[in-house]
Image 1: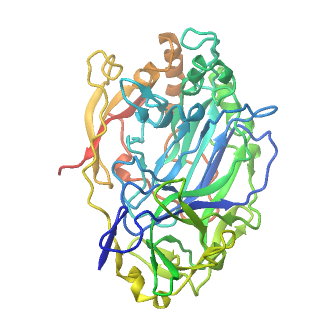
Image 2: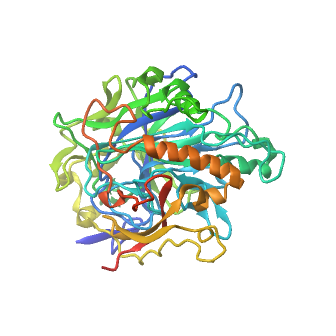
Length: 533
């Protein structure tokens, strides 16, 4: 058999630069702009491919883009949002076919990225987002490489969302300059089967300090702007392996790596459920009153301030097979997605697909039930650039001389990834004042081990690099101690789903604070590497 590994089809006379990429665009109705204090959603998690195809692989599962909301026209030449979620990324160091979760905060025009505590762009000498997220939960460890779901997750729903919470106060200056920093702390909540509650938050400084270099950004970013509730919901795929071949008549054929979607008992695939937007009465108002000396907020998001968005009929796919060595010369031809998939609102708040049983195949793997997409395609209207398309074709209709039948799709042999490290210098923010307990180790299902320590919340490195005074950090510490006492881990925060089952997080990430450190302390990962045991 001919092997196909990451970008390498050994011995084949077909091209070496073919792949499938594109978007699945979910139709969703617009809502009133007052629902601008956060959102939550439930996303199906599943193994898109059977085998990991190497670090060229990058695709998200269905997700969204949370942009700032503006009163008038959007500022020109400004791109900044939160666009993380479930998926696989080229810079993931310890991947498996179970997706991971990253936060995906994007500073203006991709100048910086913050994916989680100690995870972002840049180096520790010149960080570009590495200090952009503060750990909040005392019960959940956030690995540097991303949050792990339990290995083998297959079609279960993973709930998450972001809510604006007032942990900090607005500041008129940033880094000593006349640039304001707002107090919008966009806080990540999870709803999984084995963990519920707040996890971490983007520090306002992550957004605002960009304006010290470009003043036009002042007041235009998520530290001081509400969120736009009319977010797009899409599944962005940048690379699925593909190979092309030609028969003796000059007809072109293609084969993609086995690609799957989750399958329910009715044969349909649920992808997104209960995408909900919120106004301030859902959570912000009760927390602000609590922090101002009022009654304790329960932390449960009120449905009175919620609006579950409605999925409409329609939707479209832009999946294309790409061929060519560069973007300038690359040819892109649509695949005939609608011949094998039909998008539909399964109910007003649930989006999914029905499948053509003649061109797709039901299968049950060791992880669960799946629908396998067509693997072979034939190029129709090859000479017509506008109408050319790849249509599904049965394997026995593909000529032998294309050699496509000989392909196997295997995980390539790659060099072991380097560990994630954090600064060891005695005077660094990681060591001064430093942790109060550790080291501890968590062995994850992705084959890595995380070394972590317990830090007093206000003394975690991210907060020491957030342009906060000692007094400001102590005020923040008091607020977080209130949360740790009151917002326990074993109850509901996000509105629960009405369909399906909840996914589990990798249980190795669930931690217990050492005795005496239950309130006001958090686990911080300092190293992650492949396990040697």
